[in-house]
Length: 558
Image (cartoon, rainbow, N blue to C red):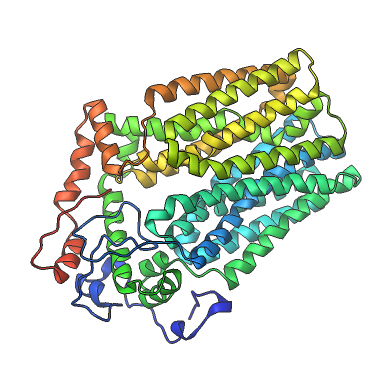
């Protein structure tokens, strides 16, 4: 039988356990309430937020209260998952320096280099699509390992490439690995974290991406004295180090997701892992019950309208999609990935021509970006979403004005470095994390999964277009012209956000449903959402009534 606990921590708690005879979707309500519990008659309130249950869980009478806090084990596992995000960041960071070396070494044209840089985002879209199948079929740990294997194969192929065609084959594997990895990171973190702290811990994935960028920049600096035709090969080969560490962690440190185990019918294995994730006294039996009922509720809500809800949206859903998907697109249309990929070209255009100086400045810029992405999580919780997004875009407009002026007026190269520092810092304190935080907070339950899929696809597609065209555009209108165009885009984006972006800080999903319904005079969405309140699923009702038969359910989805 497959082991779901990490190999290095298998203990007697996981021995002799067998899967349930049927998956969660076919279990009877009675079995749901007694499978794990040692006290089937005790009160078990579905509002307990357990690892693996969605944050939009339903709130019934608060018979049992468990104080949520993050254990050291959860911190460890979150860090392991966030390390996987470093792979995308490392590719961006290492390609920043290696791209210029590669172009000179292989005598690549501008469009060939742009295709090399931008294609990884296109392949990542494909990887993200297949990630769902791998994750649901084989589990979260196998998905982490699959992503790592793809990245290792791609890195080695690129390092050994003798021509452009082979180089692009390696790029394909790297992109698939990145896509699979990026899709699984937030899922795993959300399924092992306490619901009340899930938002904070999921941001570790974004921090991991930026740490990876910094490590990629550092690799360029570390090999800046190595001959160019060898340096880029070593730099790409070094991209296999983090995935090797990830395979080790997924095998010997990280357990399987409790939510995936419950969904597949492995209740007792899930209970053993939940026990390790939480402090002593945590009611594991109730947690497993709640995960089961939440899975059924999610499936019911997801299938209520199907894809027709987003393909032929009502006015309220159309406004939700405009905000959520528009925010995801705006993160890339303002040029962040493209500028990061071509930092060395921008510095060289500014007059910084030595590899040592270029890589040194790039590392400093990477450190600034990591600093602000860490600070941003606290700023969003304190000041709210709208103010941080506005400040971020204003800062980017200001920085792009400096960059364009420095290019047109041939100012001291220091001004270009200052402009880049402000640009990256401004992005990281708002548009970076906000582009994923806002969609997760505005999409209603009925369209959330589909809405996030569309938002992610559009974000990566926009990144592909921007990364594949920036150098050609710079050759046509100069880098100064490119910065003017990006500045105008930032201004337009700022105006659209002022007009359409609601403040989501401290708001429940039902509050956002009411907001979008009222602002569009559309009652269809609110009727669908709140119909779920007055008519909870049979499974949920029976689960609750079995332990509190004298108290009818009263609650809502948040």
